[in-house]
Image (cartoon, rainbow, N blue to C red; front, side, top):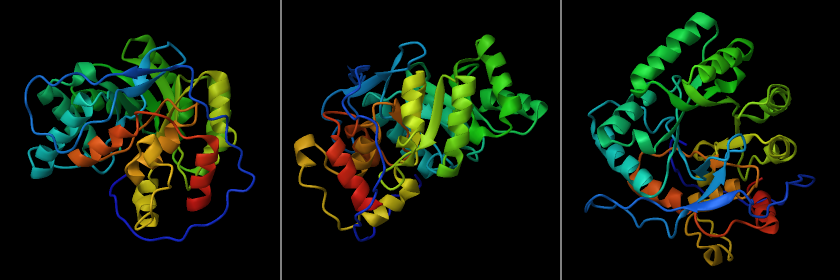
Length: 323
């Protein structure tokens, strides 16, 4: 997500024939309280109302909070700039609110360099479940890219290394496995970001058994729930969700549109919370990774990871509204 632009869109009745997997709360959930701040600090928004839900990574049972953070767009800024100073507060809100997962990529301009600097300066690295990607076309380029990622992220190892959008996966996936064997990463994964890549992502997930997949899933693009997400759940593969806001387009559609009447009953106070709550309400989903450079929006995102999840009927209602 790059922005939260708002605009009015008409509701439509659709999504016929789309079958979502059962949407009861996942039995692998627990709650992760946010760590107490070390001292007084100005807060741009109220903290999340309660501890963040956490879900287990099937490969190990390690639990991570369901609300993570991405870096595309929001973290592509100059070191030391005014935007960078705002990011210092944004990342503080994230970690002190109980977050841990950050997802980045060497393809996001200088975002990984900015994230590495923020983690180092704030002393957040030990709290961070750090995910990055391999995004190159041959082995030599991948090796050089990984060395540069280590330098820019200021770390020797990451928690998750993913093959970005299945790029050169026949070379990248074996290389990622080598790095895992060497202790440079704990988990490996495969990613994509559009519906046209879902079939190939599912095929490779079944054949290669990665620890994670990452895929797009939102109220206006719920196709991953047809087969890909249920398959991940059956195979024991963790799932990260990207584009839960459809790169900000959902906020354009939601402008001046009232939240459903039942939102307040679930403690949902914004469309951002609603869209994120939709994503994590699928039991196959391990975490969602929205990007923001604004402290108040970061605090708002975290609130989506608390309280009750959406029922099947509530999710169907949202799909019909935004399809």
